[in-house]
Every structure is written in C-alpha cells, then in structure tokens.
Length: 449
Image 1 (cartoon, rainbow, N blue to C red):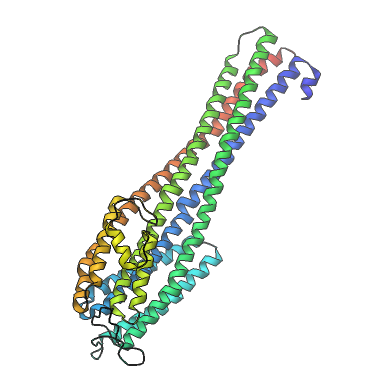
Image 2 (image 1 turned 120 degrees about the vertical axis):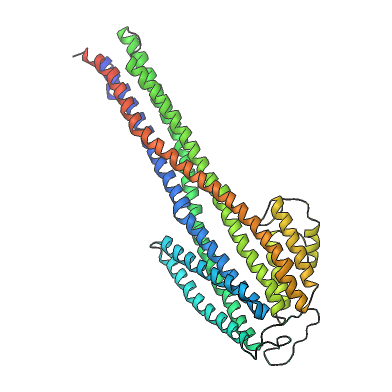
C-alpha cells in the first residue's frame, strides 16, 4: 500500500487498481486450478481407471462363468454343446478383458504383474479344464456316480445324485475349480480393488478441490467486485463525474465471471459426484453382483456334479446369496423361505429394486425345487426352470447396469462440456475486465501529467 501512504489521488487510484487486478488474477487462477483438478478427476473416472475397473470386473464375471460352463458341460455329458459354446465365448471375453486391462494399466508395474499372473494361471486352468472334459468324453468315462478318490463309493444320503464323470475327470475338474476360486478370481478381484482405489482417490481429491475452488472463487470475485465499486466511487468523488462506462462494464463482467465460475464449479462437483456415486459405483456393484451370481449359479452345477463336495457347494451358494441379498437365516432352507416372503424392494446387500427382487425370488424358488429332485430330474431342472430363472434375473441386472452406465456417461460428458466453457470464459473474462479497468483509470491518471 505504498501509494496509499503517499495520500495522493494518482497513488490511491493505482493502489485500488492494483488490488483489483490482483483479485481478478487470483479469481481466474483459482478457476483455472479448479478446472484442471476437475478435468483430471473426470479423466481418471471416465477414461482411465474407471473403465479399467469395469474391465476387470468383467474379467471376474468371465472367469467365474468359464468355470460354471465347465461344470455344466461335465454334468450334461453328451448334451453339453451349448455349455462348451458358452465356455468358448467367455474365454474370448476374458482374453479381451485382460488385453484391455493390460493396456489401461499403462506403466503400473504392480498391475501388470497381476495381469501376467492371471494369464499364467488361466493357461493352467484351461489345461486342467480341457483334461477334465476330454476324460469325461472317453468311452470308459461316466458311471452311476463319482467314487471317492480312493476308489470306494461315497454314499451321502442327503445329497441328490446325477450321472457324473468318472474319478479322473472329476479330479481334474476339482483342481481346475480350486485354481479358479483360490487364485484366479482373487487376483481378478484385486485388480478391481486397485483400480477402484485410484478412482476413489481421484474423486475425493477432485471433488474436494472443486468445492474449495468454488468458495475461493466467490471470495475473490467479491473482493474484485468490491474494489471496482470502491474505485468508481472514489473516481466519481475525486473528479466530480458520473461513473465511467468502462468501469461499469468491468464491474458487470467481474460479477458475471465470478458467478459463472462458481456455478460451473458447483456443476463440476455435481458431475463428479453423479459420475462416481450414481454411475461408476452402481455399475461396479452390479458388475460384481453379476460375477458373484454366475459363481453362485455354477455352485448349483457343482452341487449336482460332485457329491463329495455337495454340502460345501450348498453352503457357498448360501453365503453368496447372503452377500447379494442379506436376510437373517441360519441355513439355505431358512433363507429361501425368507426370500419367498420378501416384500420390500430395498434390502441389505448388493442388489435393490422391485424387478431385481422379483427375479431373485423366482430364482431362489427354482433352486429350492432343484434341491428337492435327484438324478436326471435334478439335471433337467437345472437346464430348464433354474436356467430360465437365472437368465431372467441376470437380464434385470444387465438392464439396471445399462441405466447406470448411461447416467455415468451423461455425467462425464456434462462435466467435460462445462469445463470447455470455463476455459473460454477465463481468458476472455480476464482480457475484458482488465481492459475495462485500464480504460476507466488511464484517462484520469493522464490528467495529472
């Protein structure tokens, strides 16, 4: 405030003008910083780690369904063509998901190592699955039920029995499914978690920065506006003249830029929140739900296929059901009775919605009927009513995911569109307002020369 200390009219004019220009510079610098932060957040969520999370979630789904189709193919024997075709389709999707995840991983060494480990494990899984399918197709393969690894029969009176591969095919499949559930699926899930952490950090940082920038922009705009009003009042009193049009224009432009910047920052914060919470989080949750659901459906085939592990597969079916739609129950029978009486469309777990609840109820009813059958009747129930109920349930998840994906895309597009407008506003506003200040002040300063 050196000029104020001099207490001269030109000095005061220059001091007020300097503070005004400094406030304007801080306003536009703040908006530029907020714009960069919002753009980075939208890039990570919409084009980088966000798509990588969805890709790795699709990888989990594809891997779990591959194993489900192998179990179904072994169970159906000569009628396994559809299951094998679906296995090959999922296998191709897994390859594409791994390629996309590897591309999106960029220079992240940890993610690249995890992807390489999944590729190596997938090769081992395919060898074991192919071996099981080949052994089950041999003329000598197949018996009225699998025997124990030691060769003796394993009677389990509470478990339904169907025609299954012989011990050698079943042993190979056990190794394959253990590899899938204990190594490949956890690794695929870790990839999702790692990318999801990046998305969460990008969102939190971007959202908090944009919110703070909005507040600072309002304060800087108010300061610049106050300085301009002060400058005009001072000039009017000092020179006995009406307000200058140039300074009035600069004042109006400052108010417009400050308000527009704050509004755009608020919309950017809303776009980030919508993209993350209503779009990305929901899409990811539904992708995980579909993957768990496929694994759960595979447990039905494994339950009929491997009577030695049937109780284990029934229990894992119950646990996965609880993770999707939680209801107080001690066992699967209690749970399915609770599902049958389910009325609400909002419940604990990963799923919600009236259509999803209805489809889930029909699927659990079909599963209860399946477990009341045995032998060929159980297999027919699996490939008939159970499969139809599961496909209908899965279709509801797909439709819901598409709705959230559309909301996600709209939020990203809206956010990026708003930023492009702000990048135009910042330089144009700075030039117009600075020019207005100079045009309003310079003639008054010339009078003292």
